[in-house]
Image: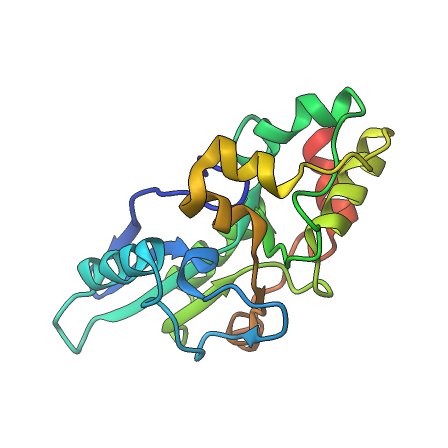
Length: 212
């Protein structure tokens, strides 16, 4: 991902003769809300530029043949070594300058990179899997402030210096600032129902592995 919260990247396509798996962004598809809970059947994809972009990605990845089994994985913030969201966060947090973005109350759907690749592989290998899967961790709902606190703990550093909303808006602009300052509660209901077993269902273990 190219931003702390969500960014743009091409649809990932993994195809076999009669099946296709693609990956888009759950954070971009579902509308930010402090109260709503989104599963794979929830509406979205039509409220701003990024949500419409995800809808176009998913449409472009869809094959017309009814005989083709198709799966779309909508991922949260991907946690992994060597880049992505963590790569942009590590320096200020290692210096003890990290903290929540804005109020910190916004939801922060995340997934360890090993689980994202695991879900994609599971979708390809398990013939009963089809439709949309939310590629987010099944851990209890995480807010941005809770994520910042857990990352600070994993690094052995304090994480209480907030990044004010006004600074975020000035640096990133109004549209991108909304992506950073607002969030969604996304749950992987169908992903779990397919039988996928997460390697990192809890945030603390995922962050410890990433920063080790």
